[in-house]
Image (cartoon, rainbow, N blue to C red):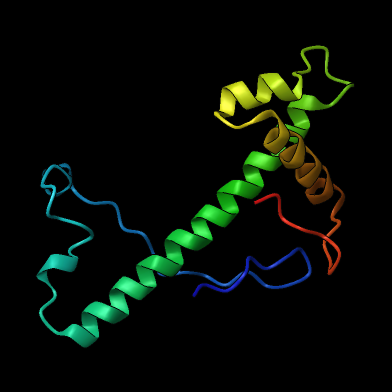
Length: 121
């Protein structure tokens, strides 16, 4: 299982690099980051685990950016402010989830993280 995303005062771990695949390899549905070419099960497990952790870390980080963007879009100081319903529609979320993400984004922008803070997911 991947470690939780480090917060502002903790160093961020660097996951395994996600290498982009050439278009020809990506067009093959059986091809996935060259995992199918690894014959040694130990090496396959190691590389697949690295990729899993990298994808989880990327997902966590992307979700933080989503939350920050949602909070910025809902900011009442913006002339083009969006409502939580508008944000939900744009991001394909429910309105309740959009409200949680806005609050999470506000906390991230303020640097509020700690034992009492809960991710919106």
